[in-house]
Amino acid sequence: MTVRVRFAPSPTGYLHIGGARTALYNYLYAKAVGGTFILRIEDTDLERSNAEYEKLQMDDLKWLGITHDEGPDKPNPKYAPYRQSERSAIYMKYALELVQKNLAYYDFCTEEELEEMKAAAALAGRDPIYEGKWKDPAHNAEASRRIAAGEKAAIRFRAPKKAYTLNDKVKGSVTYPENMVGDFVIVRSNGLPVYNFCCVIDDHLMDITHVIRGEDHLNNTVRQLMIYEALGAKLPEFSHVSLLIGHDRQKLSKRHGATSVNLYRNEHYLPEAMCNYLCLLGWSHPTERDIFDKQDIVEVFSLERFSASPAMYDIEKLKWVNSEHIKKMDNASLIALVEKEPETEFFRKQTPEWKNASIDLLKKYTQFVTDFPKLVNDLILNEHPEKTDALKEILSWETTPKILSFIADEVGKVKSDYITEAELNGWMEHVKKDMGVKGKPLFQGVRAALTGHDHGPDLKFLIPLTPVNVLKNRVAHLNK
RNA sequence: GCUCCCAUCGUCUAGCCCGGUCUAGGACAUCGCCUUUUCACGGCGGUAACAGGGGUUCGAAUCCCCUUGGGAGUACCA
Image (tube, rainbow, N blue to C red):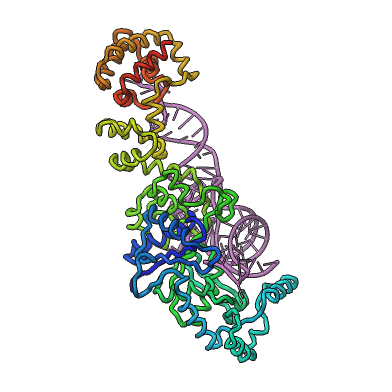
């Protein structure tokens, strides 16, 4: 039997990084075992769901490279539709069947009555387990009459009085005691089904074999287990992945700041880095690697390596992962990304050789793609660097004025747009041999004269990338 | 409150299932060193953890129990 997994977001907001992680795990597992990854939209809460968010979430998943095999936009006729809002008739059919079998019943209680029962339960220090009059099958006939007369009622599932045990791939054996939950609503009085019910019907009908989702669903699972049982449906394999938490160790949410994927996308994080980092939160690579791309993970991904405890989301490590991915990336792709950044006119006008050389030189200094334009501006195009304390110190060295005037003369003589590495070496040799300067005064002196900085990338690579007119202006600026 | 889940460096984690090879390994962060050919790169190194208490055992980070701490759920939300 082929593996079928699903990611089932509710379109009630942007795609959250926790959701992205869950989606990623499902995707990875499907790819690792040659299964099918399904995207299902859980939009039964009409008030909170909206189509715009559905689109946004799908865009974010696509950006991350988490592509589904089946979904609203890629329906398999055998399983469609993939939006729960379009599957109402299916849920209703199953709900009615349960009512007929007396495994569920109509409940005409008003909101007020339910509130009263809850308050009474709270007062008595017990869980609000439904004990309303409609639970008693003696009222079934009356209920049927009222429904036939067109009255509205919720449908409540009759929770069996027994304990359930789940064998979870991550949590191990989980036992839900008897009476953990009371009879719960599966269809609202407005006719719309509720999550715990739809989820089971869909997973069953869509032949889902493995459910990989957040631990926040672990307690829900007992309700789902009951429904599977009532349906006589085969249980999928469950893996309840630990939650992502913020610095206060609470479940990661909006108040922790940047928790939607689109924020990272807007800041031009690399999607591969994002996936890499998210994967590391609660899952570990068998050989303890921490930088990898999707293909690398697919080859070794398994459900056996999940951590059972929650993971704190730490943006510092994400930044590091991002910088590692930049270093790993080939020049052509990086150049393409850099050219999409604003304020890169100068960069775009350069020759392919210049672009390659600048990428080679600068990529080790960058954490984000957005750092490239900044570095080019700061290190290559800046004609009047600020005189820092460190720079002033270098300028005050005894040998520096000699170097400065020599460099000014040499740069003044250059006719081409750029100098070559050989030319630079010639100047260095001159300063070293003829002027007798060596070591730190030599390198830092020449660096100061040509860049106006006290430190920075390797001169022999940096200077040939710097336009000669910029060098001229710098020297003039420093000689003032 | 009740129920369920969890517990290794500040953080992510390896090791735990199948006790000895663990004076607990890696990574991020942090600190220091490598420099009379510089450097935001790179290299090397340091600080830093088995929550506590009982058991079981010749031996426990690993198995069991309790305590403590943390998280989640407790909806006609998902």
